[in-house]
Amino acid sequence: MKARTIILTLLVAVFCLPLRGQDTTGVRRAAGQTFLRPLQERDSVLIADQLRYGVLLHDIREGTPLFLPEIVPSEDSPMLVLSSWQLDSVRISARKEAPARYDIRASILITAFMGGVYQLPQIDVVVYSDTLEFSPQTLVVTEPYIDMETFVPNDIKPQIRVPYTLKEVMPWLMLFWVCSHLLAWLICMLLDRRSRGKDGPGRELAQEPPHIRALRKLDSYRGEKNWAPEHQKEFYSGVTDTLREYIAARYGIGAMEMTTAEIFSTLKCDDAPEDMMRSLEELFRRADFVKFAKYTASEGENAAVLPLAVSFVTTTYQSSLAEERKEEE
Image (cartoon, rainbow, N blue to C red; front, top):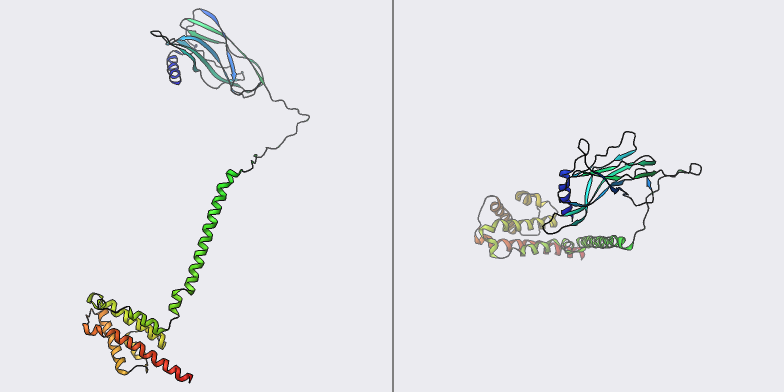
């Protein structure tokens, strides 16, 4: 239907020209009444209402030239023409080997901005050499009635507040429920992590005696695989750092920030024999050569590292334990 309407519109538009400047001589005959239909369904036409004013042409053969008038209201007329002619096919009939025939509705869009009774212009449609005369319509435009004696001006009404339904609120309730549970879960996770940080394995390790921590770390360096030339730097660094931590905790000196010479010049250790202290100092110097001078220690030197370190820790701890027992006695 829409495709045929478009074809019809194109065919008719080719032949539709204004009557102004055209030769309309020919047979004139009455063709019926025009139609006037408001776009808004109501019992009367008010100011600024829009209406369709036009004619209905019956049984028009395809390809028939049509000439529609150009309606131009006068300057003092309150009527306004809002659109040009619009064509629409109402019924289509077609027979074999015969041109199709159409019922065509042609109309323009009009309005008026003043109340009153208006005589609309007559519509003459030229078909071939015949002129079809359509009787005009009378347009009655009414103005809104306002009783000035009882009229009370009112302010603009606010927007109507429609109450929310359960269907509209339910998604927000579900979102609130999910977010609240997620927030509670995050709070529990943070509190649990904080409690683990205070009373967990890390705190237990920090509360261990210095000699226990030192022996635990030294035990992790057992095995000849740690003595390989490519791992000697990590091996000597780990052993000497463990001893530095033990010395700092046991004797209260800043061994972690001191050089080897500073440590053994500051350390006054009466808990270990002199030969053990000389061997320990030699171990620290060898570690410095391994770490900074790319020195490769022999297997004998590597094998003596852990026994010396463990012996130093246990000897000094036992000496301190004996002193504590004497003080208690």
